[in-house]
Image 1 (cartoon, rainbow, N blue to C red):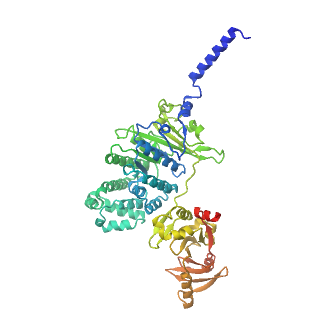
Image 2 (cartoon, one colour):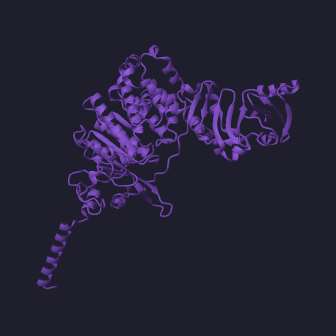
Length: 581
């Protein structure tokens, strides 16, 4: 048996061990204990709750930071907006685009006007918002908004630079209150919404500036919307001055600073215009949202500070009321097969959150007693005294993200009574999502029956050659380039009129006709249109036309290689149902 002295010694050692564990932080470091308590997994369908979001009472401006064109920022935006709207009284969504362009999105989420949405999306091509999930986001918001009472509806407002002048002009056209007072010059501008951007910019500047010269006319046309037109004109004035003073139009510190200052002034305008208790949610590129300077290649240098910092300093009305929420977007590594944060977050030691990299997780960093509200050695290298909450107050970890596909556009062609698509994918999206809309009524029946697209052999093998597609009530047209010529390939599904006309020209010896052969099929050829060569043939009892849009000698043999209709199968829900039924 152990002696009493040994037993006492064991008890003393045990007590000392307990005390050491208590005072050294049982269960890990202070940071680990905090994260264990507050880091919560996120289900995008179920959304956030107040407990998960944490401290919100002191905030009026919720500022989420994304990485553009990543798939996971879209479910995050839906979830965040719905939570803030239902739990924090946020009714205003501020967008990283111009006030004029933003009018298109707001019009859509109030009315469901798909033609306006399609126009807005087309104008986003090539911009930071060029991502197909944009379409689903705004359609979701329209549906969500339609279920809200009038005084609770969400309004979308652009506060940044005007990245697309055509979108801005179209937005201005929605502000007209007195159509009968619109001048001929304004009408011409509104009726050519997709004109050359440089020419459109020059025209709209001449119609708005100097503002004093045009004030009476603008007040007559736009009525109560005049002040919004003034804000848009203010942007044009600032931008013209910026460029004239040598400002750079390329992305960089100088342009970012111009944009953030312009956004700040638009927010000031909204604070003076909207109800005093108005709350806001904005989702911009992460670099705009930091409330303290980040000296990093992706966010700028020490030459300036970003919008998040400007909102929260000096005598600005929102000082102390800004909540920055960092979306830490992750891609799965092809090597480790594990999620890793993108390089945009290398300016701080993000490894502290690595236990949560594989699960969408929300972490409020600003709760009482948070270690993130004080300096943690090595957390922000080379920034003495910096706490992580000096930069942002919440973090949402978004694993399994990917680069989003580009916007698949469609637009209505009144001149052809048809719809034009920018790609095969755009056509597939339309077939799956738009056929019940009144705007698609004339073409809905044929679209609903389409399980394939007829194309020449070269486009079957290389679908990226397809420039656009037009679906009209009697025919479908595919545009492509080959042999340094522009071609139109048409499937005339409703009748054989084009074939009968080609036969008539041949018999009457009109338009330089000839008859050729492709794959044992007679092909009638003649000069059609202005400087065009047409080829017409029947295949499987269907009429097809190939049009070369510029005449060229010695091209018949090469053209005949294109005179064969191949089935390019469409990947749509409707075609998939047909193939399995």
